[in-house]
Each structure stands twice: as C-alpha cells, then as structure tokens.
Amino acid sequence: MKLFVSTLAAAVFGLSALNTADAQQNQPACSSVYTRPELLSLTPAQWTNTRNVLSAMQRDGWFGWFAYLHNQWFSQIHGNSQFFPFHRRFVHDWESVGRRYSGSFVQPYWDEMRDYRVPAASQVLTSNWVGGNGQGANRCVTNGNQGGWTMSFPSNHCFSRNFGNNGNPTSWYSPEYIQSFIQRDTTMAQFRPDIEYSLHGVVHINIGGDMLQGYSPNDWIFMLHHTNIDRLWWQWQLNNRMWTMDGPNFDNSAISLDTNIAYYNQPIRSVMQLGYGSMCYQYASNPIRRRALDSGLESALINSLPKDVLSAWFPDTAKKPAIVALRPPPPLASAAPGVSSGSGMPYPAKLTQQWIQMHKYNKADVDKVESDARKFVDAMNKAGYRSPV
Image (cartoon, rainbow, N blue to C red; front, side, top):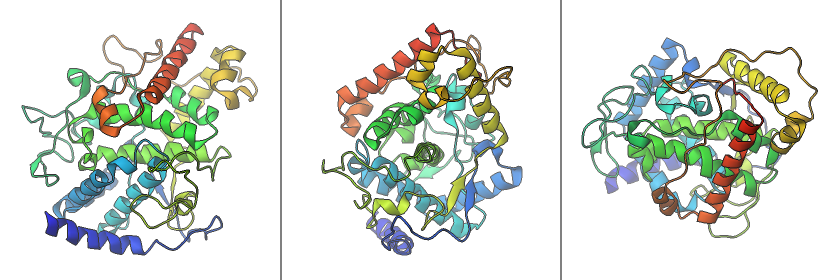
C-alpha cells in the first residue's frame, strides 16, 4: 500500500505543481474553457468515452488514490469553510487526470434535485448509467459502469452501495429549497452548512456503501455529486458573491481568500473564479432539461406563492415582475407509485447520527438546517404550492 500511495502521490504532486503559482483576483482568463455537462445529456459516444476513461483510471489505481486522499484529509475538509474550495480543487484534479487519458473527457454532474422525490427511480441509477443498489451480504454492485469492480482502498473489496431506507431512499432536497439557499444566504458561513448538512449529506447517506465512508471517491457518484455541489456554489457566487469567503478554517481560525486550501499549497482565491487561472471550465447555462426546469420553477413560484411567502424564501425572485399566462412545463421527474410530480412537497431526509458523529458536526447546527427545511416545506404546502418537479 505504501508503494501504491507514494507512486500515485508523486504523479499527483506533479499535476499540482503546474497550478501552485499564487493566483490574484485578476488572474488571467483561460485561453480555452470546456463545459461540464449534465450526465444524462451525454451522447452515446461521449458516454462510451467516459466509461473507457474511468475504466483506465481504475486500472491504474486512480480511484484508490483519490479515495485515500479524501480519507486522509477528511476532518479538515468537512464542517468548515474549506468544504467548497477543497472539493472544487479535488474534482478538478480528478478531471485533469481523466483528460490525460482522453482530451475530450469532462467530468459531468448529476442534477440530483430533479430526482428528489423518488431517488431510487432516477435514470442515473440504472444499468445503462452508473448502476443501482448493491446485492448480497457485501452489497456488491453488479451493473452500471462500475459493476463488478474490486476497489483497492482501504483494502481490496467489491465496489458497494447500500441504499437507505431498505433500498428505497427517503426524499431528499427539492430544487426549490436549494434555490432558496442561493437567494437567501449572503455569507459562506451561512451557505456552506446549508448545503453540506442538506443535499450533500443525504445523497452520501442514501447511496451508502462506499459513498458512506471517508473513502467515498471509490464511487464515481462522488464525483457526479460534488461536481453538482460545485455547480451550485458557482450559481451562488454569480449572485454578487464571486469573492465571498468567510467563516471558520479547520483549525477554527478565520478563513480568507489567502488561506491555503487543505492539502494543496495554493490559496483559496486561486479557485474562486471559473474560467480563470487553472479553473478552465464552466457549466452549461441552459441545457434543454435544465432550462425547462428553471423556467417552470420560476413561473410556479411567482404565480403560486403569496407575496410574503415569496419574499421570505425567494427574495430575488420576489423582485421580478409577475409572470402571467406562463404554464410550467410537464413534470420532469419520474413518478413512483403513490408519489406523483406536482403533489405536496415531502419532508427531506435527515442526516443520521452516525454521519453527524463521523464528521464531528455540531448537532445544533445540523438541527437548525433541518428545522429550516421543514419550515420551508410547511410554508410551501400551506400556500398550496405545487412543484413542476
């Protein structure tokens, strides 16, 4: 294991060395920028190329290396403001390794909020994509792009998933609630726990298996998930918060743009602005599915919610003029028996005590986020809001 780690560490340190120059707020724009797509928007050829790259990365030990690295720095990168910048840089390094195998490889994201009502019914979790729940005593995954894999860290074991709630994960966080965070939160000290203790945690917990461990990068869903988390951070940054970085560091000192990212000898400011410095990627601003969803949500919010409720939970949307005669698009999420799109909003899943203890979270902070989520659902349902998702 020591030889494995030292060999791969040398390779990654070599990769990191390309990007360790101090970056200022006016760092140069990238000469070219590639776009990270939504997973389900990939063409068959793109998906085949992605699968080939991932198989090569598994063969050469990269899944093990990134699982090791995340596990080693686990306590420093959760529960504090390192959360977003570390994972942005971490996923970027992962993607950069993949682009060595194929210059057209780009790390996609999973827009999990679209599947929040019935996560297990997501098209993403089918054999044609990333596969489903594990089977047998060891919860080994047998289908999807990682089906039948043996993972090397922390020791050889079958790649596993163990979906929550006996294989039928409880609803997680709606796109409306995440959009509410993006509009309401003005500091990183607010936004980080609101995301980390909600969508971030429940996806890890409800996928389970390797995703439930410190070495969660064994599951490629980790990368899909954290690319989406990064996309949400970018949306928040674009709301006049491009350079907002505050709150605690992992040692409880005050974090700033000049604080080094955990593990990386690189200041946080160097990863803050996409399209600049080494962050030469962007997110599709309006893929067809995303555009339809965003249009439907905004129309539903403005037309369905009383002004006081809209202002309390969606202050930016409340400032927009009323949208009259706009009809939300057809439901975009798959409906399971007994749960239909457009019905009342369900309460989201909560973090487990095991997960809270594992991360050493402050229970009161977690309770605050979860209480806010339930108040949000109550307000939406009391107002008679019907989501297009």
